[in-house]
Amino acid sequence: MPPTPILIAGDHFVTCGLVAEQLRAAVGEAVEIRELTLPWPYTPFGPVAEVDEASGTEDELIAALDGVRIAVTQMAPFTERVLAAAPELRLVVVCRGGPVNVNIPAATAHGVTVRTTPGRNAVAAAEHTVALLTAALRQIPANHAGLVAGQWRSDLYALEHCGDELAGATVGLVGYGAIGSRVARILHAFDAEVLVHDPYADPATVTGRPVDLPELLAASQVVSLHARLTPETSGMIDAAALARMRPGAVLVNTARGGLVDYPAVARALHSGRLRAAAFDVFDAEPLPADSPLRTAPRVVMTPHLAGATRQTAIRAARLSAEAVAAHLAGEGSDTATTAGPVPAAVNGRR
Image 1 (cartoon, rainbow, N blue to C red):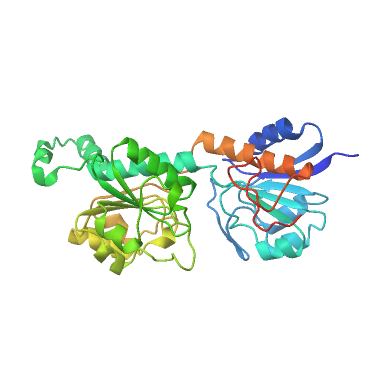
Image 2 (cartoon, one colour):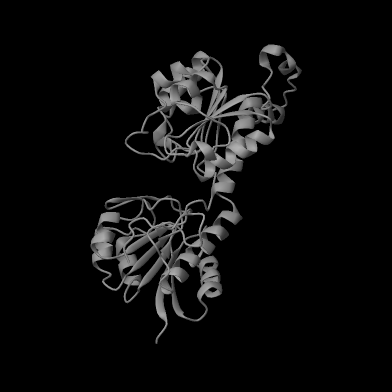
C-alpha cells in the first residue's frame, strides 16, 4: 500500500520541521509528508473568507492539498471553498485549542474529521497569567521603566503606593478548563484563596471554592478570565460587572479579548475603581493606536503571547502526530478528550 499523503501547513511557530519530526516518530514511513509554510507570525493572522485567525490564502492551500488525505496545521484557512476543492481529504488536525480557522459545518458536510489539540498551551498560558497578575499587583513594568529613565522612587514605599501580596489574597477565576485549573494550582502554592465560576466544571474536581459570578466579582481582589468566547460570555466584563467588583480590584485577561469591554476598563482605571489590570488579549488585534488602554494608568499589557513558548510548539506537534496516528490506526473516537492519547474531535466524522 502506498504511503498516505499528509500536508503539514506549518508556520514559524509550529513549524513544518517540528510536526514532521513528531509524525515520523508516531507513524514511521507510513506517510508521505508534504510541506507548506505559512507567513504567521511575521504576517499577522486574520479572517480569510468565512473563517477567522487564519494565515495564508485559499489558493495556495488548495494547490497544496491536491491528493492529500490528512492535513496538519495551526493557521491554514479551511474554508468551504478549500474543503470543496479537496475531495480526498479525510482529516484536519488543528494545532490549537479551537478550530476557528476551519469551517466546521463544511468539514462535516464533506466527510472531513476535524481534531484539535486543546491544552497544548495550558502550561505557558497559566504561567503567563500568574506573571501578569503579579506584575500588575506590584506594578513591576512601571517601576522598571522609571528606573531606566533615571528615577529612584523611594516614595513608592509609602503605604498608599505599596502593592499587594498574593498570599492571603482572594483570586476569582472565571473559567476552569485546562488553563484555569492550572492557574488555580499555582495560586494555591502562593497561599491565595481561589474562587471559581464555571457552570460546566464538576465541583468535585475544582481546586478552590465554586461560586456564582456575582459572588466572585464582589469577593475577589483579583479577577482572572479563562472562559471561552461564546454568545453567552461575549462582553461579560462590562461596566455593570466592573461596578460589582470590589473597589481597588485587579482584572486579568489572557483568554479572549471579546470577553471584556475595554473602554469601560480604561474608565475604571482612570477613576481608581480598578487598582490595576493586565491583558494579553484584546477585542481588536493589533491594539489600535486610539485604544483607551494605551493611556490608561496601571495597566500591564503583552501582545497575545501567553502561549508563546518552545514547549507549546513542541507539544502541539506531538499531539497532532498522535491524532494522525490514531486516525491511521482506526482508533479515533467521538469521546476522545485532552486527557487521552487522542486530541479532541470537533465534529466526530471520519
